[in-house]
Image (cartoon, rainbow, N blue to C red; front, side):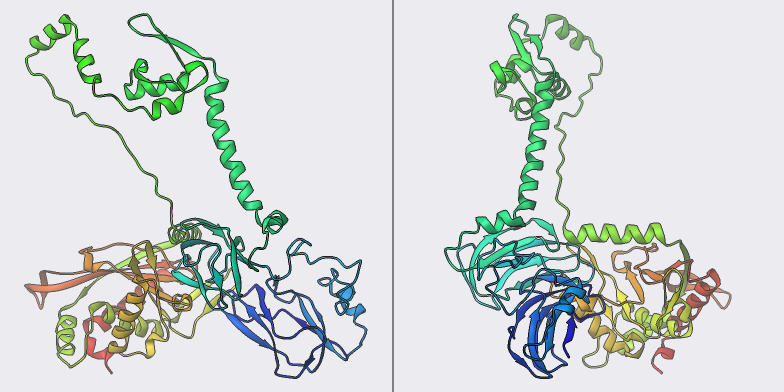
Length: 546
């Protein structure tokens, strides 16, 4: 009996898969355990093996095509078996009446190909390189149009919301077309490149749909240009005149800009119809070197007398206003989106305590005298948080609407500042790590995060996050919760100041920490108890070594 094989869910976040390569073709014998295809998920390209034996009767998703999880991928059965009922009932394979007959005159073309993609040509789209990626930016192309591509070659470096990653080709051929230029961003699944035989005419492929986005961009740009021109063309021409009586033809918009900038329209050359001055002429105007002497010569005797009569002339600063718009990186846009969603959806509240760090300073100095050992105060905070979360599991939760998820594992997120923004590497099972293990892991993850070598799965799955700005001298601050976490700890600087101990004022070292909590999952008393436990560990570091 024929077996229907659907697109598998190969990762916990996978919603759609792409068949990178078929290792079997229709009519081939398939044994249990044989590799059927290579499937590209949202995280990696993985081999997919068969759990059935028989003959491959039907392929539902062609190479390079993507489809949602549980879509019809293939059918395996006995040679010659009638599978028409399975095809008609699947709802996903109605585009082909009989797969084993490639010469079918009435067969419908592949939806992805649209009947226009030549044989051997592969369309490559912007990949989803992380579970949160919605848009990617091409940081650099390592191949150019006309280059020969081998399977496994690195095509480009793509900037995601979390890192810049190398993207390799799953195909061999010639790079025929680049759809996204360096520095440009595009949504996932946008046309990235086309690979195929040398000399292939890609116009048919582009016209089949891949170039729609590019055409839309050009149309938008054209509309913007026409709109700007229309601003000058639709309004009536305003006629001004110089002091010599010469008439000046300029649009009202050009006159307004000139007045705001203090530009003499008689010095501006018009590029509009019949020499009319329009907006772009004023914006591009550069004053000549003779403008200052002419202005000085125009000063009247009355003005000179007025200035001379002034008792205390005021010298005002003279300058030119300026600004610059810088395109937001993919990481910057995702940070804005995620933190905005967190701040506006989760009811934040904040609890602050001051911790005596005298014992922590002494313990750290003693630990760091050991060979090959280097522990920071941040490592001690991470260790204390991990141990406190074991005693207060309510803080180690996630809000899921109708349910609250209690995480029985502790994965600590560590906020790290990078050039483009902020990333959060994750220490997995931090409660089971020693202080020295935490120190080594944080140093490694933070270093690779700053050099953009960190992997996406190393920034996923946190259950609690720590953000430390103490090294910048910040005494106290609040953070936005890194959802789906229920809390985040903000750590300030250690300061020396007078403190009261045993009724006497002595010199001491203290540090303020602020806990931001999601009130949907963590009540005020629960957050306060967590901070009490955290303070006990930090003020008595020996308890963290037991």
